[in-house]
Length: 53
Image 1: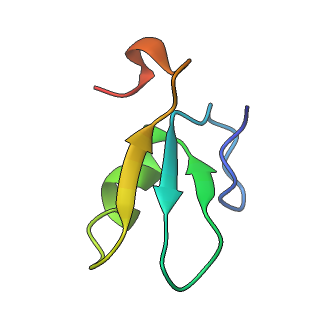
Image 2: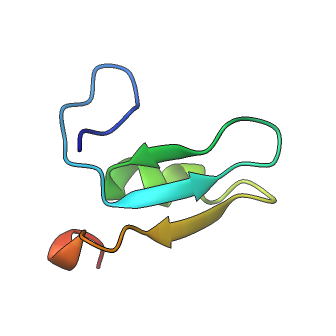
């Protein structure tokens, strides 16, 4: 599965639960940045393997 962020072709490894928007699946790089916002919860995808450190 590919990261849902615009112009990103990395493999998604994390599902972000965002209270004010729909959940998104993103790569680890985007997850590290976006999960810093208050209320956002990052859940590693079950098949992410070593993608999510």
